Image (cartoon, rainbow, N blue to C red):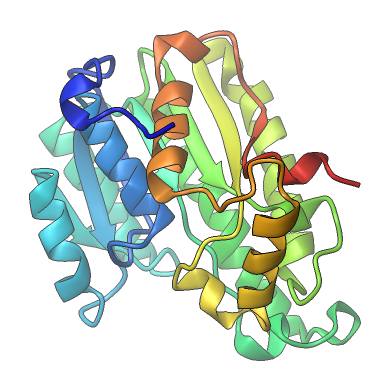
Amino acid sequence: MALPDETDLPPILAGRKALVVGVANEHSIAWGCARALRRAGADIAMTYLNEKARPHVEPLARAVEAPIFLPLDVRDRAQVDALFDAVARKWDRLDVLVHSIAFAPKEALQGRVTDCPRDGFLAAMDVSCWSFLDLARRAEPLMRQGGAMVTMTYLGANEVVENYGVMGPVKAALESAVRYVATELGPKGIRVHAVSPGPLATRAASGIRDFDALMKQVVVRAPAHRLVTIDEIGAACVFLASPYAAAMTGETLYIDGGYHVLA
């Protein structure tokens, strides 16, 4: 069954302010989330990694009428400061944070975890996990009326996925961080989740060896016998940010056609 047309989607997030980080191009999971949030009525702030990425992301920001569109390398504290200063000045609040950023140097990702160099491990953990904690800490004071934070993980956090390498331990740390942040921010009405999509042909996945073979395996073995789409992941993000998920927090929600239930 196809997702409903955007004209059929109820504006359940009308007036909400959402910050989406990690859009690289029109194939990005983050773009699916930004588009779905906008269709649900939210106002969108978006970021781009650098000037090389900007031409690919700027048309997408225009498509969702983003009033805030700024560069963001999460390792650049000045850029993170500028982003949250802009959100505070423009909106004076934030209701939704979507963190869809992951990175590991090639030498760390494609070798054995046992042999992962220290610098590569720290870079992967910094960008893929600690950055979520940093953004969550900065978003917290802007979520005065509560809110939702969502980050992206993968099955390799809990199972050994061939060629996923050091990102498995890093995503495991991210999922643990989600549970701790959910516990700490819950009394403020802030809900925190990880979404675990099935494999998709995104730029972030391009560094994983034999990734095409993994996608083919999922199509064959998953109960749904197909890959998921960025729009389906975006729809899950809308649900988690909506009042319908008011009693949920600290979850890892799988959007993978049921692949994770297989032994």
